[in-house]
Length: 323
Image 1 (cartoon, rainbow, N blue to C red):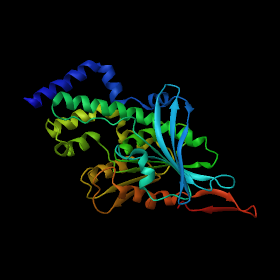
Image 2 (cartoon, rainbow, N blue to C red):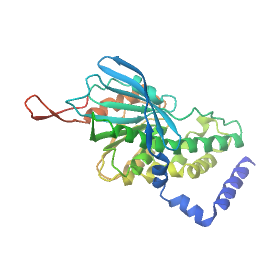
Image 3 (cartoon, rainbow, N blue to C red):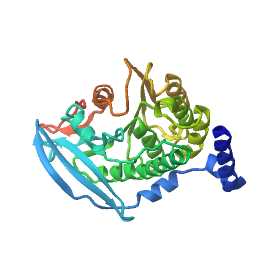
C-alpha cells in the first residue's frame, strides 16, 4: 500500500507540473537561476581574528543584496600581502563540518582557504512518508541556495588583492560536491580555475536508493530513489560536469565507499570532459565529514596548485608549489 501511495504522489506531482513544465524541469538550464540567486556581494564583516602556526584565521559573514547571509572561515598565510599573490580554494565540506573544515585540514601555508557554513541545520525526519517528503524538499531548497552562496564566496575571493585570480580552486565533499558541481557550471565569469569533487557520483536517485536502508526511509528503496531523482534533478552533477569548459576537474572516491558506489563515481567521470582526473582513494570513507577526506584534499589536490609568479628580490619570476 505504501508503494502505491508514493507512486500516486509522484504521478500527482508530474500532473501538476504539466507537460511543458515537466519538460523544462527535466532538461532546463538552472544555472541562470543560480547566478540570479547569488545577487551582489554587499558586506563582508570580519570577526574572531587569530594567528596560529604562521596562519591567520578569521570568520567572515558574506551578505548579498537579497538579504541573505553565509558564515565562512578563512585562513591565509600570516605574511600574506605585498610581494606574493597566492592561490585560493573555496571549500564546501559536509553539513556538520561547514566552516570548521579550515580547522580540521592540514594548514595551507601558501594559499588562502575559505570554507562555508550551510545556512541552517535541517532536522532530518524520516519517521513517516509525509515527514520524509517534507525533509527531502527542505534539503533540496537549502542545497539550491547553497549553490548561490558558493558563487558569492567566489566573488569575495576575487576581491582579495593577495589572491591570484587564475588560481582559485573550488572543492566540494559529499553533499558539498553536488552543490559545487552546479556552482562550477554556473560560474560564467570563470572565477574557479580548478574543480575538485570528493565522494560524488552520477545519479542522485541511485545514491538515495543505495542508502535508503541506512537512512531508515519509510518507503521502498526504489521508490525513494525515483522521488529523490526528480526532486534533486537541478543538482544532478551529471548535468554539469560536461560544462566546465577547459577547467581541470578532479574526482576522488573510494572503491569501497559504502555511501557512494564506485560505479556512480566512474559514470560521472565518464560524463566529464578533458582535462579530468579520477583518483581512487584507499579504504572506506564513513561520511562527508571524515577528516581523512580533508587530508586527501590537501595532499592530492591543493598541493598541485602553484602559487602565482612571485617577484623575487632580483625581479625574476619564480613559482612555488601549493603546500
